[in-house]
Amino acid sequence: TGLVLDCSRVTFCDSGFLAALDWWPRQGRRLRLTHRSRAVERLLRAAAGSLSSPRKPLIHAQQTAPRLGPTG
Image (tube, rainbow, N blue to C red):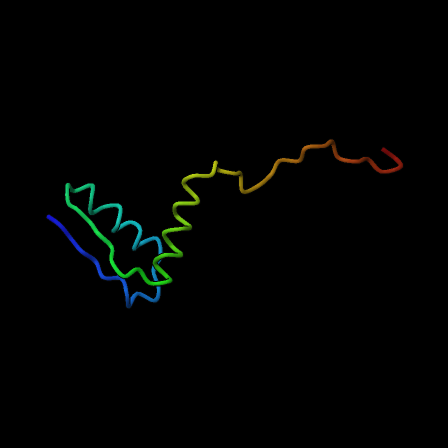
């Protein structure tokens, strides 16, 4: 029921890795990461930062009325 994951040789990880890390404890199992590589640390920091900040819209709506030309 417990997994100790040595991440010392991980050079690339993405959202699939995060999904696995999220899934394991949801199954009632324990998870511990040891020897976190630079790639793992970077991904975990990015994921933690995105959870703590409010979501921002990807496309901002135009705030001002469009400027009309000399004829309009």
